[in-house]
Image 1 (cartoon, rainbow, N blue to C red):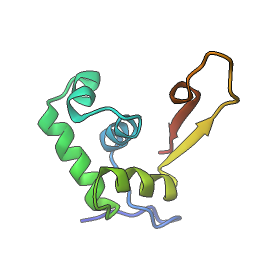
Image 2 (cartoon, one colour; image 1 turned 45 degrees about the vertical axis):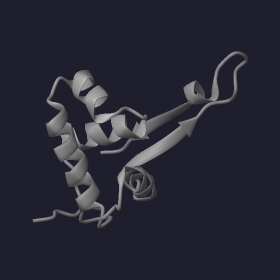
Image 3 (cartoon, rainbow, N blue to C red; image 1 turned 135 degrees about the vertical axis):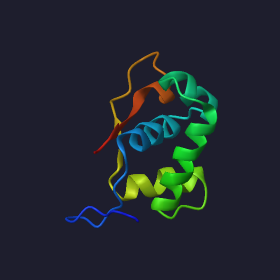
Image 4 (cartoon, rainbow, N blue to C red; image 1 turned 60 degrees about the horizontal axis):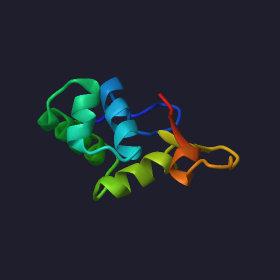
Length: 96
């Protein structure tokens, strides 16, 4: 059964699904996510699939995009600093 946030109507994700979503949004592979949070890569894949199905995304890229549109993730950008690469300037903040 799919649970929705009563105020927003957005599907509710588990804490682990949020954690995996955030790491995937930062560009980590399932194997890298697994190493980061000390779970099996197959379990990471299952969490990714659960999130993807809950928010009705077609693939991982679409999942991250929809998560941002639904307010599950927010991109925070900082002002450019000399010597800082653009990938290091942006940061994702995830909302629970």
